[in-house]
Length: 483
Image (cartoon, rainbow, N blue to C red; front, side, top):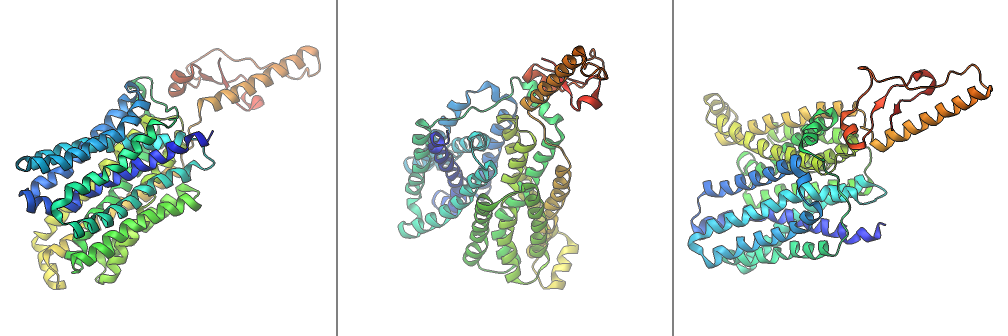
């Protein structure tokens, strides 16, 4: 059974690596785009915003309308979209330099749409493949993304150094070979069945599940905690710590990605008790943010940046693992909702830090404080922004504590199994009573439905059964599900 899904796993790994290509390539080329095509910083920033909006739109569409799509065909189409996006991204500026930004923008939107689909569908595909330890498989999948970022940054930097920045289109075409390989693998792979809600109203019903709402909050805070440090670490190291960019990027940014991959790989190898891991990660992230914001030592600041990668490594995949455990019958809609929460956090966190840092740098109070401490206004503003960002993991601690107190939502088949056992006991009691062997036993009979019966509306539509109380709950010890 497992062997037939081997190529499916590798296709998922290649797709996640492709996501790291799409996420990392543009930031590496921003200065090249500005110098070669005269693209302004505001337009380059717009690329990031449009990419986010595209991915979030895909997440929301699949959160509520996943039942409208052929999921298996969509999974197979994803890597083709990535290839198409990277080809447009590379060739349009090459052949039409006067419309370079338009080509880069269109290509970015296409592969951002593919990344949005990947976020929604790759995790449930891995979760649906039979495994002895599905939690570790999920962590392994997400570790591929982190290691992919490290590989893309190093390989792209070396390529541009050797062949020159003007040859960046060929670099993009080389990276397009990764999703091309994923396309070939998916074409010959068996894709497991993925559950989707039967109608849109059932997707909205997901919000009635307290544990799932907490999981969405956890991944929102985890995404904010991870991406805030990931996106601002370079500026923090240069402005707040006074370290040159090349050393800051190597020992700060690259080490962040390295530790991110290491944390996920370690959990994939040895991990268990994910809720405790999430709690420890949020606590560690608080410590790292406070150290980065308050320490005046450059070495401590660099170490804090790197260790933030380790501490945030399991916040995103760990939230997905908990959601699958708390809501095992959720399927694609749950993963789409979780991806939307993570993407929203990944946007809100860095944006909030930018706004707070600018406001603090322009404030008279913080300007005077910076002079007193011998810092620049930008440095004190960046530190205050990171201090505010520490609120994300602080709130995350409370969310995880609440999650540990919620019960796992049972599958419909578990409820039916308990009901069948209860009915069997009732039948056995009836036979014994009629035969005169146990005259003290009253035969178990279901009472008529009343307003006090337990009606699980989420499972009733799916299983066609209602869960009702028995006449003698103390004797049977379980509820009875009507056939």
